Image (cartoon, rainbow, N blue to C red):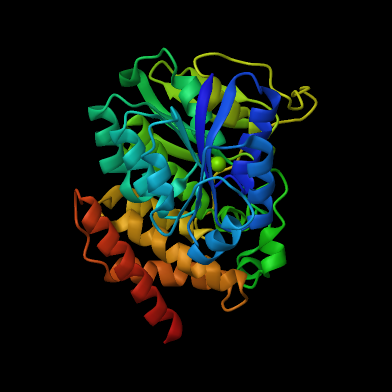
Length: 378
Ligand code: MG
């Protein structure tokens, strides 16, 4: 039986993790849950799964919850890291959508726990440190994202030295077929109109700008120890092939299925086993198509390739600025293209620190958020 600590259990990925748990009640025990936005849902999850511990980052919300449930509650900015430090669980499922995810991942690695990772910030902003510590502690990071799960499966049992390139597929996002002018003035509703995957708002905007694909490129570099030159992004609107690996002999191995996050989530938890998944099976009645990404219309992907080439603190700066600007876009305070323009300006102004430690990364993130606010308000 796997003993899970699920960080971000009320979010889009977190609820799908619990869907998988519901399919296999005999295989899992929920040791801890953390949430921050939806307290009603967190309360319902506490009643249903009876965790031993709960974490809530917002102290006020935690106080409110305390009166309603009897489980011990960790609260404040360190709540996720405190949960990660517990002895009682064996697998951390990190679905937090913020920088708080980095520290929790590092704590779990130090404790030699299994880590199933959906949190993007961990590898985008602190990939070098996280992978080094994972190696030192003998921890394998199991990716939850569909692309990285696909790459993991396509690389399984192969010699990494024979990889020609990793090919990461991309649905193209909600604005895939729009002109440059239409993209520049896209409304929140248009940018959120993503068809193939059901996801949270922040990541849906990142999919519309292709910034999300840029994050995934950087994550893949760290997870599979690949230089940026060996990673290619291909637009694949049907989202059936979740990514591919091309080998030196020109063979390409792909992983396919209907797009449903519960499959990569389940695989991250069942590996090395494969279990029956409750998702629709691919029926081979769809044609699969491919195209090159258009960096003119989706320049955020170009910024990510730049950050991937430089590394150091630059990816963390890109990520933090994007976070800030997507918040502004979602609240109607800027145009979609302002996201790109501000990230570019902040990245250009950044004095990159190569091989940063965690303090350097935190400092760069705080600097980027301040710089983004200055540029945004000017
Ligand atoms: Mg993805």
